Amino acid sequence: MRLDEVSPGRAVMSMVVCEAMSNGHGMCHGGFIFSLADSTFAFACNAANQMAVGAQCTISFLRPVRIGETLVAVADFRAEAGRTGIYDVQVCRGDEIVAEFRGHSRMIGQKYFEDLP
Image (tube, rainbow, N blue to C red):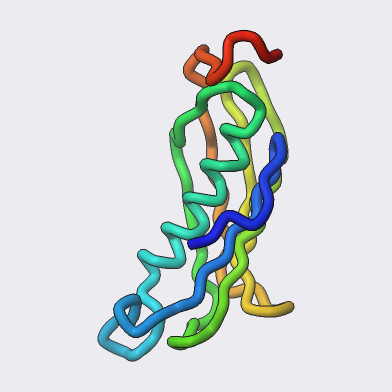
């Protein structure tokens, strides 16, 4: 996985699917797609100098992914209530969405850098 962009509430990561990521059907195992989405979510919800952890997440796999294809995951902040945040992550192959992920974060009340807001 490669981190391509990060800012408060947003992150973009990419990954080329290799042979070691394949399942018994010769497609990308869903766990690797989930890991890409979850990692992108983690960068997005931790980029505002507030430590956050994942509290809940779901993923819907929409299309198969083949070995050699490049996936791009884009995480965007959607809403916040108290210490809970909601983020959506789209995992795409080119212009085609292959998975949709929704993550709920929980801020743990600590900053990474105390001298920053």
